[in-house]
Image (cartoon, rainbow, N blue to C red; front, side, top):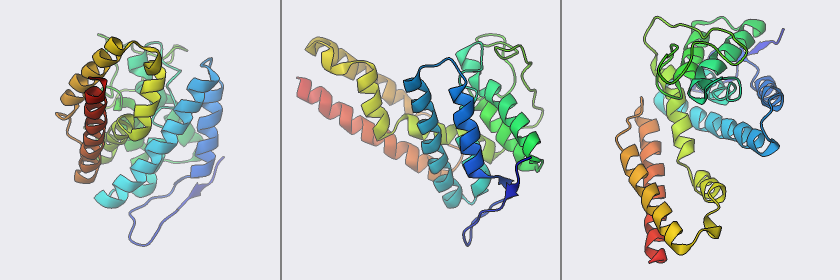
Length: 235
């Protein structure tokens, strides 16, 4: 059984959580056990680390439980490859996180907040859905059902995920993923225009805390500036 730890800096709001370094190892091993490509697993693990760093910053600025939000952000995508349908990977991850917390003896109320936040971080819905998703993971385990409304901490996990998804790193990764440099100029123009149209819609999203929302808008503004300049240079 993994020991709990209490990590705090002066003025931080924290609780005893499973050891963060041990949780990183658990996350890495769980992702490594999937059939995803090495590149995909690497991206997912490093994305989780970036989201955890964002979570710590948000929690510190918003007065949330620092250790809890950081841990929830670290584990938010642990079920990425465990769902039968991609939209369910948060709910699949909630199963994994709940089991991990039980093994670690992490039974504080905030553990349930983290699990609920992981469950809902993809689509804002913590309970199983029968329209796009299913009611169980790829191994046949039924998804969890939650009764109470999600806390600010739970909702903040998805906020931090979104902040990283529209980061500077994501610009580079997206251009690589779509093989931008091998597109024709016309295709590049079309891609930039479509990206800006999608980006415009993201401004309607409201984060659960002011610090997270400020980071969110800053990232959107940065991407908007980049793709607007790119579009202009393409002529």
